[in-house]
Length: 267
Image 1: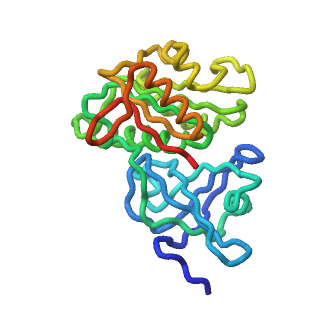
Image 2: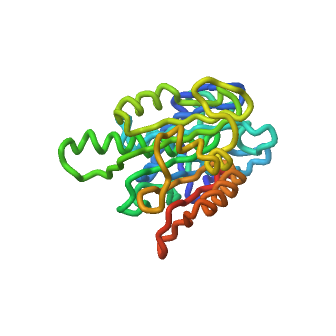
């Protein structure tokens, strides 16, 4: 019997979705602590030496969803050279997995200044996960609050998802449902770098931002007064987009000094 490291709990895979050869989702049942949409935890497995390998992954599901707090979903890409993701890729329904009990991360609705009217969510690859969680959490809060003003509202929500090929655009059905729910308030902008696809921009987020293409596609402008931007994904994208936002006159958000953008690297 292997001792589980402090901070991990035992979970079980309850469903697996294979999006592409390398891209997959795991739904996991685990007794984790309460978390907020946009946060992440760790997944872990034993390696061939009997040592635990752990990596951080964001929850795709809103904590308020109908299956309950302990039903988690993670979007994962298999890294051929990775220590953990190839092992996660081999898991199937019923297999054991270890999950971090306590969540982490500050890419949440609570961190956004109360004056913000437009929320932009810019991501690459699997980093679309926490933004789906945030959008679904907002939807559930809105539906449960009905006519009250107990939930956070925005005039405009923009989800920008940059991938290499069209098949890498995951969760299309869930995103379409969200777009329908928000009735024009949510704009979805896919970006594909290696193919020309109708309805998608082509290129990289920083250059499309500086060229005004993103604002045109979203029919919305980014400004210091109303806009807040979350960046999540490839560290190079986060760095380059942060520089682009600085060029546009925006500032990094800090608790002691509110700004217009914040970021989370995905590895």
